[in-house]
Amino acid sequence: METGKTKILLIILPIVLTLVLIAAVFLATHTGHIFTIRDDLSGILLSQQKKVIIDLRDNPDYEITHIESSVNIPLDDEGEWLLKKIPEYAGRFTNIILVCYSGKRAATGYNLLKKAGYFNVNCVVADFEDICKELGYENLKGAEICDCYKKH
Image (cartoon, rainbow, N blue to C red; front, top):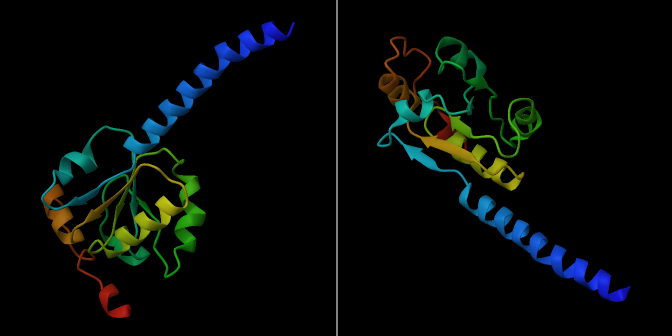
């Protein structure tokens, strides 16, 4: 009887190890990106690929101008609001794209979400005004660079 258990173990163990290896490779290759204005932002932001675009700017500016289909979660100093609200829109493996005024909040949000266990986080490090121009948006009021560099 002991030999039967050993045979089963010898069959199951390689399968489990293979699944662990596949999971490790998947997680290592789905880590996200940092995009700049030099990248094809309109292609990235307007593609039909499943994604969630999170706009980290303050709500009044979002109301004036925002990327179509984006969600507004203003980034507070500690990032608590982002961490609280993000599960409503994205799972741990969802393709998340973060945008803000200049890229600073997006980079902060990127780090927060990566530490919180989100795997496919992307941030756009570019002026929101430039992003809007590339997307062909007319109304750029509210897209100006914020004073977030002066706050710290």
